Image 1 (cartoon, rainbow, N blue to C red):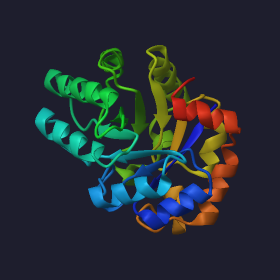
Image 2: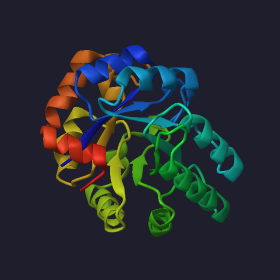
Image 3: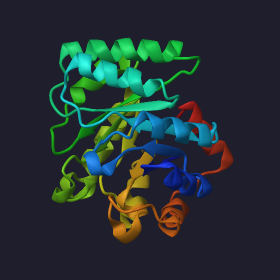
Image 4: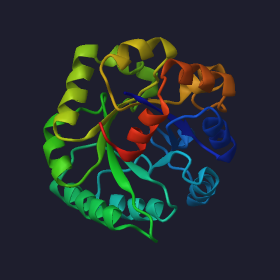
Length: 245
């Protein structure tokens, strides 16, 4: 069972995504990079509008791997009430960063302003994938891992990695109890093959937008088309919300 994550940048796009029944609304500003962050005001606005009807995730920006900086960014985004916070690995995952992630995961389990959150770590195929860190991430309380592309001009995920390698990533992540997500300029034509790998979710931005451009506005018919190719029952959606396999 695989869910659909739709990256959106504002309230209007969130309304489209929610109307088309996506499983995860992902807050991201594509004009600011692979994991560009939206403002806390936008995040709060979307969280209030969604009101628990689906999961809301948010990125914290294309940040250098500095423990203090990442910790502060997670704390700031957590204050908006999002369910999931995505942290990009743009360099080596140092012991200091791992310690910061563990601290934030503990904070997320306890809750901020009465709201719990979890952390998903995003690896980039064009930045190097240290799959050996998955065990440490699981022990640190990280909820999931995702595979994406940082440089959107180099082609999509499946042009940079073979399906067998993607399968290995998904299987490896799940063996440690981590949720496994795949993204990176994915197209409708990629979905059938990727569903066979059984990731927990597939992430989309460009394929949902006008002219298939990630910096253009979300297009409702495009979202509907992708949604139709990733079908879930009501029970499946509940499993995604609960983070169960």
